[in-house]
Image (cartoon, rainbow, N blue to C red):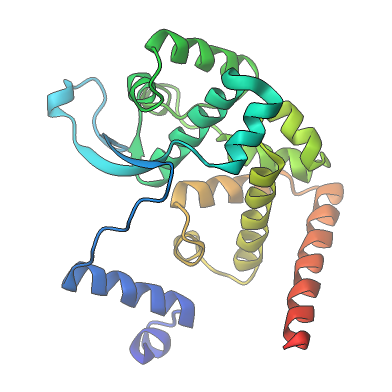
Length: 247
């Protein structure tokens, strides 16, 4: 820890994460247990060449959240089975991306136990609403756009409430609140001078999502958005101070 902190100038938390990763690689570690609603899937690596036969494509194992429990039940109650399936499509694609993998529509159909025709119809409907879907074809064909998480943060910065965002995106207010809280922590670390790689380590989120959030942060650097963000950051800071005082 001292070498990492004083000779390489890593923050203590970053040094601790590096040590934990090194221990897992050098000494081996048990594969983390799946939570309820999760499955493992084999997908193409994000950097794998496009157009190859499936047998020649480099693959990697990812953990997918098929059922998010209460959040998914809330979406189903408000938007029905089609709305829930479309939220799950977005979630699975982003989870794959965060684990340096990319999924096809066929992968989604197998994971969600539905037909490829249904997945194609859902994808067309989402894209018609302006939702970017990072499938393998999109990543290697037209390049990256903003994922649904980044789009939700953009809506929030521009003044939409959780309920308004939920209405427009079919996501639950609970999941939207979680995205916003992660974004606020990211902005605070960014302002403290942490690199994107360090932020990803500290927040335990994928580097692509960190980059998406930082892009949204820069794109919405306008007076109204800055004030909304500053108010929320101050509220978080006040909450932390109150907790410390209670201790």
